[in-house]
Image 1: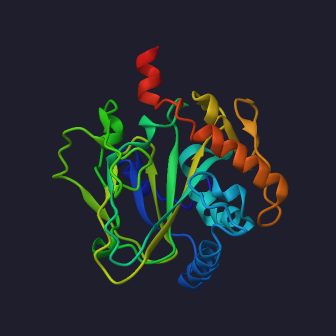
Image 2 (image 1 turned 90 degrees about the vertical axis):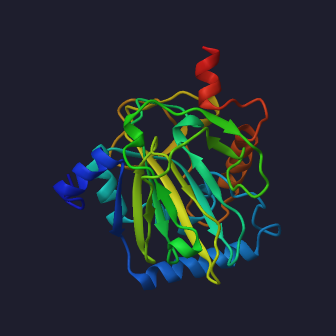
Length: 277
């Protein structure tokens, strides 16, 4: 145990499915990462791939370093132990006055892990408040069976399929307000969402997902990961290339091949896969 999380933090994580806010870097460091991200964003479609929807940490050394910030891995170690795999990442950026939103959903419905000892860490590079579309959680929803989802394909929905939980009661939802350099960690089955950005400020967050190596992938197109701390004594995951510099040709080829598998229309959600079995 690293001691980054207190006993009350750990109890809260088990009970509510999340712990926040956690300070993992200074506001100045977060601002530096924001500048690098926005420079990268401005180059998309030129030397940077247009799609950065999954595992972008494989393309950029700075993004890999953000996801392996020691204070962040210390908190993850307190939750899952000293051996840590990073399985995926995602960039969640909303412009000022951005109408896009994220409906209530559970990540576990679309990614396969067994057992579900998986946690996502969402790092704020800007402030993330109610007015600019912060995350919202439904505490304790991770302890119940997975909720039924439907796919709306709504163009304003930031989720790939516009997926949403059917008939959810969000009267007990909490707002996850963060300052730059803070993060929130949530269980992979915790129901969460976010509203549009109604402010004149951007809202930028980066998500990294972690699990211990004894967890097995249950989807063939999502069976690769990076060992970021400790050892892998199980071998359930195919190792990914580690980015030594931005847009390393080996990593770029790997990323494009992975993205083609990930976006294959024949890929089923975890819920569909379980139903088929």
